[in-house]
Length: 302
Ligand code: ADP
Ligand code: MG
Image 1 (tube, rainbow, N blue to C red):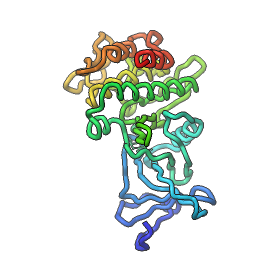
Image 2 (image 1 turned 90 degrees about the horizontal axis):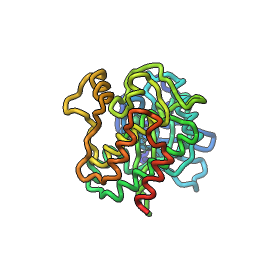
Image 3 (image 1 turned 120 degrees about the horizontal axis):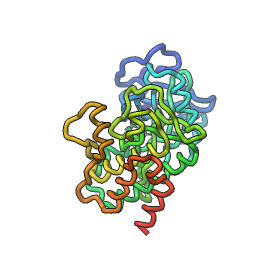
Image 4 (image 1 turned 60 degrees about the vertical axis):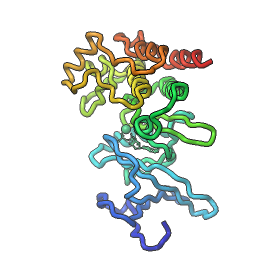
């Protein structure tokens, strides 16, 4: 950072990403006014579709302070329609419980968003703050429900709601959580559905029976995933396993269809486990929608 001995790469000129070495600063031009700069060693996360680095925005105007950002580089295998869809969705969103989009860089296939220093919620639950008390978890459950209500009001189906895709915002006046990772998100058709074409790499443990069996997604399948996310939260980051040993997709679906559900986490408040059960109703339209979930939680904490 300004020591003068870094190698600087303008990544829009590179045909492929080099192997990370220290002192390698990557520069991505964004506008005529600003660029994003990051060190390849500052990787903060890796998911199925992308690798995320911590970096900062630098402005021509030297009076404008540096701003920390997260840079999501989509894996090169990813087709560019997916990249454009993710950008197209993220840039239309504006809500306190949705991660803020800032810029994108076409050629380098990356998305620049606000950096949330407390990282992803799954790690936070397991390692950073496993002793979170129930009232704080209930507050986070309300944050997620509010963010999801906003998405469903926009006609958007997230399709990958899980603690790993929630980010924790640690700021002066208390923490809150934000929904991120719109890599699988899709707009619903006029009937409220999205029918997926491929079954590759699906997060099956978070998926509703109708999503697994017929690839049919709706806000109600997001509600199912919300219930699984509640399970992750109140078990302080436990894997949502129906059975101790991983079984086949077919066996998993059979178990769900015969009514098997995740167990109640120890010390989980009654109303939260009741809410999980409602989210896991076999009939999608019998599950509460996110507006109802917001009401249920709000009434409980009033
Ligand atoms: P993928 O689509 O590959 O799953 P994600 O968008 O979920 O990618 O990002 C992968 C991981 O990177 C997250 O689980 C989280 O740990 C980290 N991450 C993503 N965005 C941010 C951010 N804005 N601030 C901090 N960490 C982030
Ligand atoms: Mg992810």
